[in-house]
Image (cartoon, rainbow, N blue to C red; front, side, top):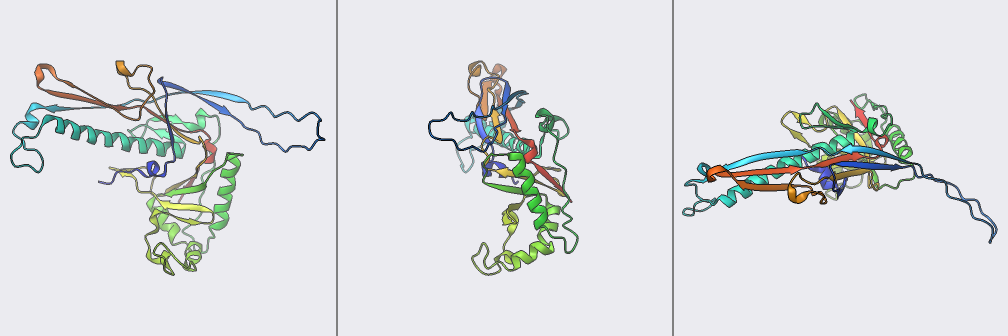
Length: 314
C-alpha cells in the first residue's frame, strides 16, 4: 500500500530534538523599518525593539508495542531458503521495520495537521493542538475559487491568496507558495477554463515536447499564477489527510515556519537526552516465551505563524 510521505519528501519541516517533554516556543515579532540618512559622525538611529511572547506546548507521546512469540518462528524457514530456519532476530527486525512505518505515517498525518492549522490525534477527532488558538491569531477566511463555473478566472484569486500569505509572513523570506489539493478539487481545477487555456499555449511539458501539459500526469505539481499546485496523495483507510473537496495553501522555504520537535523517550537511558525521531527497544518475556518490542516517537509539529495558511473549499 502507498505510504503518505509527501511532506517529508518536500523537507518542509525542520527537525530538532529537545531534552524535555514540554516545549516553550518563543515568538518574536521582527519589525522592518526604513532608515533615515544622517551625516557621517552623527548619532545612529536605534533599532526598534522586538517584543517576545512565550507559549508552552506539551509534546505528544506515540507508543506502539508488539511481540514475537516462540511459536511464530518455530519451524519456519528464512525467506528464500529451503533449509535454514528463520532466526528470531530477523523476525524482530522485520516487525520493528513495520512498526516504524506506522510512526512515519502518523508523523505525516500530524504534519499535515500543522499545515492545516489544527493537529488531530490518530483517532482523527481529538485535537492535540489548535495552532490558531495557541498562537492567539484568527484563521484566514476559507476561500472558494468557484472552479466549477465556466469562465471563472483563477489568476486574480491566486494573486489575492499570495498577497494574504506574504502579508502574514511579514519580512520572512520564502521560496514559493504551494497548494496541496484533494482529489475532487484538483479535478475541478485542472479542467477550469482559465487553467486549460493558459497551459494549452505552453510550448513544452515534462516530456519536453509542445503541449506536454495535455499529455503528462500533472498531479505531481505544476506552477500556475505564481503558485505550485499539486494533487496530494495521502489516505489511510477511510481517512484522507486532505479531504477531497478542499486544498491547503502554505509557504515553502520560510525559516522556522514549520517545525518538528522531538522529545526523548521515557526510558531510563534517555532521561534528559536530546530527543530522536524514533525509538525501539526489546526485552525477553517471562519464562523466555518470546520477545516484547516497544517503539515510540514523541514529535511536536507546529506552524509558528498560522495566518500563513489558507484553506480552499469546493
